[in-house]
Structure formats: C-alpha cells, structure tokens
Image (tube, rainbow over all chains, first blue to last red; front, top):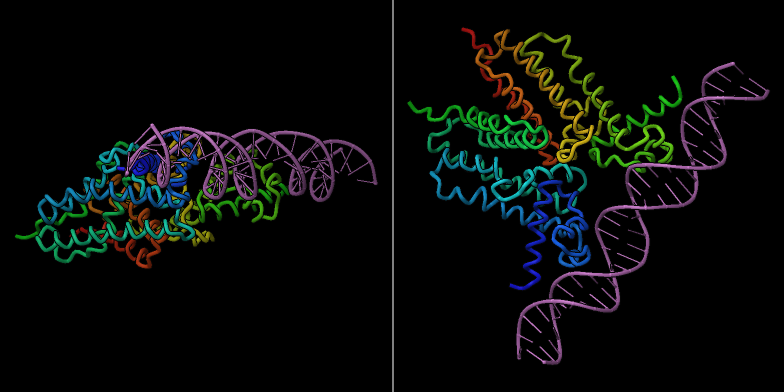
Length: 198
Length: 198
DNA sequence: ACCAATTTAGCACGATCGTTCGTTCTTTTG
DNA sequence: CAAAAGAACGAACGATCGTGCTAAATTGGT
C-alpha cells in the first residue's frame, strides 16, 4: 500500500471523527491537520479542495455505516428480526463504529439545507437509498406476517426515521438519559401489531 | 418609542428571518447589516457581542412562536382538538410567522450540540418547556377520553416531536412534497385510539 | 545506492470573521 | 435654541478561513 493512501486513510478516519463531533462545517483544515500531525497544506494536497475532502469524508462515513449497520443484517432472520436488528444497530452505530460523537449524517443535514452543491446531492441520495432499504425490510416483514398487511411501507419508513432522528436529538442535543428507551418504546409501538395472525 | 428600540426590532426581524434560512451560525454581522441597510459596527453597537445578538434573536423567535402556535389554542376546545390545532400550527409556523425558511429552533439544534454556552442552555429549556406543554395537552386529552387512559404522555410528547422533527427534515432538507401528508398521517396514527369509549 | 516520483513543509495571498475605537450625525431633553 | 445623549459610521485590528505556489524531504523501484 502506498504511503499516500495510508495517510489519506488516517486523515479520513480523523475527519469522520471530527464530523461526528462538530459537523461538516467544523471540518476545518488546520485543526484536522493538527489532529493527524501534519501541515495544513500537506493535508490539503491529498484532496485539492475542501469540498473534495468533505465528499471523501462522507464516502468514508458511508462505508462505515454500511459495514456497521447494514451488513450484519445478512445473517439475521428475514422479516421483523432483521428490521429490528438494523434499527438497533442504527441507534448506536456511531459508538459501534468508534466515533465519539453523534451520527455525522444527521449532523450534516442542517449544514446543507440551503444552497445546492454535490455534497447536498450526495447526502439526500444516501438518505433516500437507506429509506429504500427500510421500505424493503418492512415489505419483507409484511410478507412474513410480522407486520399487518395494510402497512404503508413508505409511511412506516418515514416514521422509523422520525424515531431515529428524535433519538439523535434527545441523546445528542438534549442529553437525556431516557433517549434510548424512548427510541425503543417507539419502535415497539410502531410495530405494535406484530403477529396479528390468529 | 425610541429610535434605538425601533431599529433594534428591525434588526431582530431580519435576524430571525436569516436564522430560519441559514441557521444561527449563518447569522453573520456583515450580511445582516447589509440586509437592514446599516453598517456592521452600527448594528453591533445594539448588542455588544455576537452571542448577545444570537440570544436576542432566539428570544424574538420564541415570542413569534408563542403568538403563532401556542396562543391561538386558548380559544380551541380542550382535549384532542386543542392538541391537533397546536400540532397543525406547529407544522406550518415558520410560514405563518412570515419566515421564508424553516423552523429556526430545529435549525439551531445542530449548531450547538457540542460545547456549552448560554445559547445552548436557553434552547434546551425552550424545547423542554414546549414538550411540557404538549404533555399537559396530552394529559388533558386523556381526561377528556380522547386518548386512551394508558397513554404515556412523556412518550407521546417525544413521538410527536419526532414527527415534527422528521417533517422539518423531509420538507426542508429532502424537499419532499409528501412531507406534510406524512406528518399528518403520523399524527393520526399516533392518536389512533381516539374516542375508545364504547 | 542512486534516481525519479511522490509526499510534505513552508510561506503567503485574499477574503471574511467578530471586535474595538474615535468620530460624526441625529435625536431627545432642558 | 442650545446642550446633552444616543445612534450610526468608517476604518482598522488580530484571527482564521480556504487556497495557491515553491522548495525540501521522503519514499519506492532498479
């Protein structure tokens, strides 16, 4: 492995850590360079622009998310167990991925709500894709009879994301100890009609 | 009314507008001064520090929120109607208050999730207070038989806020036309056990 | 061990940030 | 109308931002 690729990986690891703490605007070059023990320009040469660095960080965070949250589901029982597993890992994925802050994706939302740019584009696509995953899982749970046949999967996915988003808010910003319990109770209530078969 | 107080009000009106568009970190002095047709320093003299300007803007936004969302509930029928009215006005309050952006409170959440400072303190208190209002309304709806007697009002308030937060995300960041419908369907599902009396 | 290529440091730039200061203009008061 | 008080201006500050350059150091291949 070339030296450049190695330090680039080091930078990205530190960058996603920083993004989980202070968002993507807090992803400034000088503090990041200090973190990895480099000069600002030396670090800069790896990406060519700040936007490229942000994009690369977003990409790296996506890989982390995939391997931490989605991939382990492959070995879980299809239907509701798999859905519940994804949700549970989704709740705690920043910690499980070794990040000391909160979910960098949610943190990035506010910083790109106005204006355009490829970062915003990429982030909305990530959210849409993952919501598609949830919808598929919900549809599968329906077919297994774990959710009522009348379930609106799009609405279900939206409300599941609402619960996760609220957890991000309650745990990160409000610092409420009950946040995790609230998120779990919400999931239970959302899927309250489990096994409605007689 | 003194001249100073008048321009101060003008500044705050522009500031809360700006905060609804670009958050509280986008609340920079120079652009804000240009907006109201003043010099940066002339504007600055009214507050003495950026933090004081942010606090004053937060206070002004709170007044707007109170008069737009909470106060009209006084004339509504107690119980679920009042709760539904609050929720509906809550969904559209930035537009109804004349703001062209999104809810400035949600926008401010991400910008102060780390660190301390009086702004963060104030904002968490605002959220806690309003959630207390929702809990009281839910309890009242319970007493009126509009919600099941077994309702956990704290959990209910959390999930209602989750729906509102998700609407903020879906409408603002994701720009989905179905966001409002999702929010309303979620409310209906959350209060699905209306009038359970035989 | 040497050479070529890659990687990092060093320095400086224009811009913008919040902040301060002294001055000038406008409003309020006696 | 004159004097005191308040409000806004204009310029400048130190700091930090992202971004270019060029030169030195380090790496990997032969």
